[in-house]
Length: 304
Image (cartoon, rainbow, N blue to C red; front, side, top):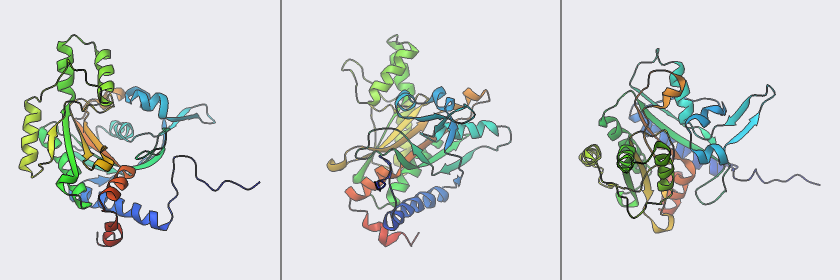
């Protein structure tokens, strides 16, 4: 009986043409991030599983995380996302590091989910994080960085839309309705799946209004407030945003991020205000194909 030549379900082989496309995507990511002054870091794909259980998404931790015990009987996970690893690294060197920090990475991450359009069990993801600035200027910068990456890929403003909200808006409104912390977490997870009850609505606060004005002052006009936007991770503490494809053939969220100022608390060190985003290679590939930008890969990959 011969061996199966198919790769593990949900992962991809990269033959030379696919590798050229992947390298092009990575080169765009790196060129724009470094133009903004971000420097690259990395870490192992292996982490202690408890790192994700402390602050991760319940769906990822309980249903999608690859977990096993090593020969030392330690519970280990293949990283499902990079942000907790970043927090661990910052906590380890908290006193030695000089803030603000502008860091980026391009890790491969693993999630046991049903393979479908836009989703794989392994994908690569650009993570950009700005640490050490609590003001709104950090949020403007991180969204501007995401916007410039989309433009570098050749996208027009009408090809994508940036939507913003704030966990502060959501949490404050729900607290006024006497929601407990656990009820707020449950509501936020449901809201992230598009379930907004008819009797609840959220309005932009002064911070979000100011953010929208400042973004438009930076020539970012395809941005709006979205009361249904929440992002699924529990660690977000303020502004959240997502970038959406506007083409009806691929109308979906492409990537997103937001502010998470308290992630270091699980390590018992002084917190660092942080804002960042993650952009996956699978959804970006789909976007390039949908908008006929994929040909730019062969035409432009050598010009970066």
